Image (cartoon, rainbow, N blue to C red; front, side, top):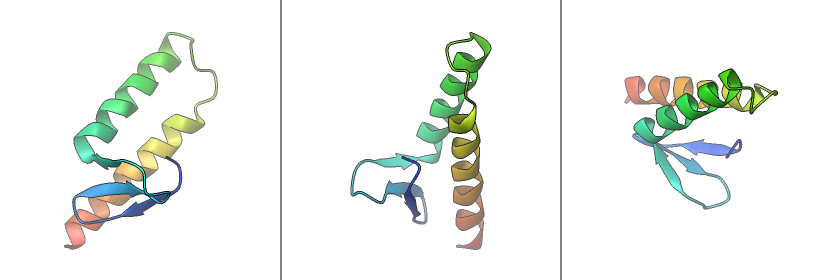
Length: 64
């Protein structure tokens, strides 16, 4: 999931996997945040990567 290709309305996995919409990414980000608060996830790298993906998606959509 960390290696992605941006399109107008979604983020596509570079490996040809699933396509995630902004809503799906935000839901995943919320889950990671909750896992961090619950102590289940100690490394917040996944949190940072999701935030970057959402920022890139919003920037790309605004340019379109």
